Image (tube, rainbow, N blue to C red; front, side, top):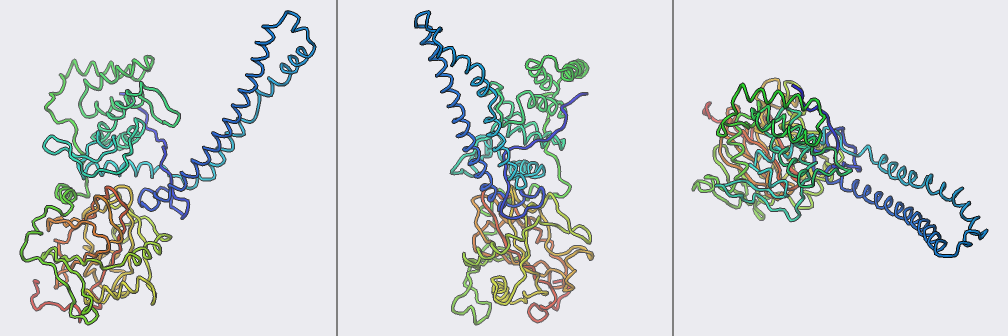
Length: 544
């Protein structure tokens, strides 16, 4: 059966021009997306210059038109002898010989267009690649899924989910960004290319609705049309078993393109299918969300991300507390740390105001030039993965660096040796569009893991510092422990990855929820087993 050819196209998401960006990775860091604004600003300025030059050119043409038209009107009103005036005859011959030629064959329009194209080509290296476009679209679909957002609301620039039949705001942005039919077509097309008809149907439905609302009129910046959206939506519905609706959409498409042979064949085959197989009952589930081979705890993960730490039972546990913590260290006697114990199993604490705003900005600035796509363990090596969307950089500490000062402060608060190689270098992470890290363990679960490359044992503990705030999303969800920690700017989260016997604590399975709104930065310090022999002693009980 014929179906729409699979092709890709670009639309206006622009990239970073300040730092070198690896091909197809802009969408993995919001820093790069923010820097892209300067690229588009320059393109806007170039377009304004082009428009001004074109208006000047058109004004010249209008002036010529007015001159000639007024002269003809005056001559026609005058006596018959007016055209026998040699001056009138001379100017007529001159106009027809050269002036009309100069106007019609002027290179000015081409020069203006070429100048605009040249200015665009200067920015081309900084523009997004195909992978960026697809990644941005996938980020929207990820946010749609994890936060149960309605596509119809996203199209209107609102972040809403359906609760008891009522649309409820998850987040209300100060500036609403409306999506066009072409925007929705792009997202639906990306899903379509992955044979993900659950998402393609929802986004293409909105695309068709919006294109219909404009009367199907084409805009020069659009890559898709009403016919394209109908074509892909019809086949998507066919793949989900909704043949009757696929037929209806195909017939609408033929109204716009009656000679489309492929669609004519599809209509004929849909009609035969409906004769041999009755339409599916409306109550039958047609759209099924695709499963993930990596995410086996999806329901718990998404529930914890949606609550963002606000509705969990651990806040009501009387054994949990807040205090001013000194850890028995003289350095903290006059200025203790504000500690909030979030969980006892696993042991997870939040240290408020652990870092200053200036230190956070220094760390982010130091990391910017070194940011690269974040990787995950893949056997003995490391590789990028769809279930981790961010960029990260490693900061090697020097004696007077901010990173070294943080190492010392981490050691003071935890009582552990955080210096390299007993602690890994500080990892700074910036999340991208819908940036996330699906459920995982920080400690190695395989003897061949790259974690052991330092030769200092497994990752005993994690110390994660929130370098920024976010408006919505981005919580850290502990899946088996059933709670989540919202992003608290300048605070730090600490937990033990291993039991005292050295075995991994399965309750530390955690995830970085997708960032809904905001620019999330964190700094991770992983402290290893070796070097902690006198700071974190083994238990006398082998099972502990």
